[in-house]
Length: 276
Image (cartoon, rainbow, N blue to C red; front, side, top):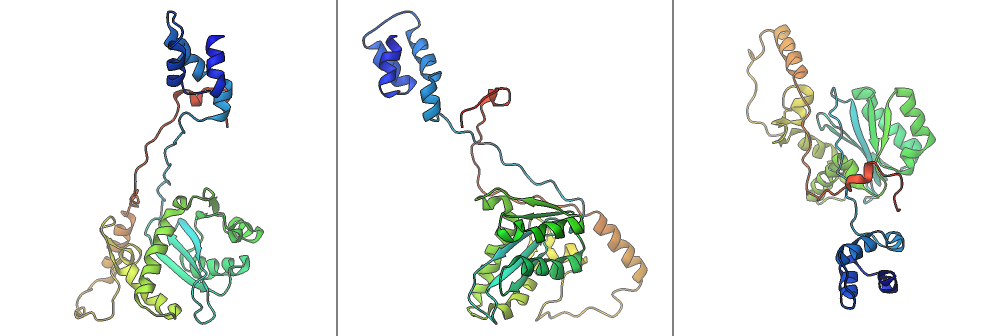
């Protein structure tokens, strides 16, 4: 009755309850009784959170082959360039190969058409397609396309862009490269920007994106050296070695930027009820 009367005034913490009770009363185990009372108070549990649960972030499983897991997203609205205001983006999780297609609108039909013409027609049908919860990707048309090509559609957590971090990080690089050209006609610069991104060296991959896709680097404007005529003498041997090399490729995990302290209650997996 003593603890209930004192704690029931403002429902303070266990430490404050102990301080108030011990100023006027004393009995064996008074601190323990006050602490247990404050922790088991139903009103406190309904109204306050003593400690938030921070679950560990799960990682995507490594894809089994190239172009088997693709991340898809949209950029825009951008400055109008040749009547284009948006951009459809896709990136392969294995090789990090990116694609960017200008769009005049972001209707579900336009997004589906860009996905088929820019990705599926060139790299085949992926096993998994990861998108955010945009209306274009939640439409009946996109679900029908995913079912038609036999892909598993994965939607990220709402209001959590980091769940689709691979393509979101590509957006940052793509936008920065376009802004460096200082030209509002970004649709003309987009192909060259993609060429530079695919040819850039990746430290975590120990290769460029183009090398993981084609087996050799791309020829860039301004290259000074020309290949010799006798560079490839046996095309059959080169093809066999190239196929063997591509089979040995393994995906590289992306870098997790930032760390967050993880805390999960020990009895959370066994209790029957929790306060929401």
